[in-house]
Amino acid sequence: MNLKKTSISDIKAPVKEEMDQFETYFKDSMKTKVRLLNVINRYIIKRKGKEIRPILVFLSAKLAGTINDSTYTAAALTQLLHTATLIHDDVVDEAYERRGFFSVNALWKTKAAVLVGDFLLSKGLLIALDNNEFGQLKVVSDAVREMSEGELLQLEKSRKLNITEEVYFDIIYKKTASLIASCTELGAISAGASEEDQQKLKQFGSHLGIAFQMKDDLFDYEKQGTIGKPTGNDIKEKKLTLPLIYALRNISDKDRRWALKIIRKHNKNKVKVNELISFVKDNGGIDYTSQKMIEYKQKAMNILHEFPTSEAREALINLVDYTISRNK
Image 1 (cartoon, rainbow, N blue to C red):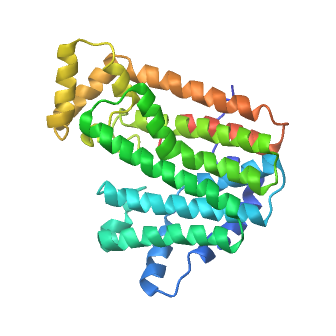
Image 2 (cartoon, rainbow, N blue to C red; image 1 turned 180 degrees about the vertical axis):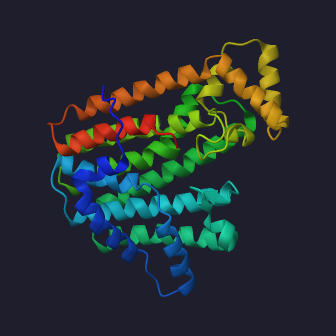
């Protein structure tokens, strides 16, 4: 097991030159003649995150073949789509902060945020069409469908509070892992990899994305201040994630009724939410989820070890480790 502490800069190192060129490519892809839209887009670019998805596209391409113009198209397509979904998510969740900064809907209101998200999504699709990347368009369109289905499935199940572990994994594959899997698959496709390697890297991205989402779900039970996500946020939104699903599995009917009552009626009560967090910890929900996360991490690692040793492979191994050891 690779236990060394790795930064995003270390992970990006094998494709640093390409990522530097991508910055310009991505900015150009967002340009428009509408002044308000340019102002909002500049705000988005200045506050970009770690750019994990384009890094995954470039590293996957380098692992499976050679980075080329098609790779830049794939990276821009996935990053535009990801940015669009984040803006729409903030609208849906009525979130007014992202990564410590005001969200687009906080500064420019809901109507502008929805339209900016739509613009970015359309720009991504047009980049693929303008470059005749119809295969890329198919992969990403499938991911968009999966993400929408995942969010709506979670919404449906949150109302009924009847999510099983099987349904939970279906939700997190659709809402998170599907886009990450499309990044690694598109990297392989852009590099002209064999069908076998394309499918291997898609599966790698799927396992990585599931581990990534489980780490996010564990953050909900971390102490306030250690992460950007508020403690108990999923409970407040009536989202049943794996720690809580597991804790509810082997308890008395009385305890289950108590826990579900908090989610239904007292999910905004900080004291009650903290009681439920302690309940989840005491009933093994954190340990079980951590164990499952490690299992998916190992599945991702096993696929990487089927490829020859290279800088790109080492960077992807480090990225897997980073995914489950990050603190935000």
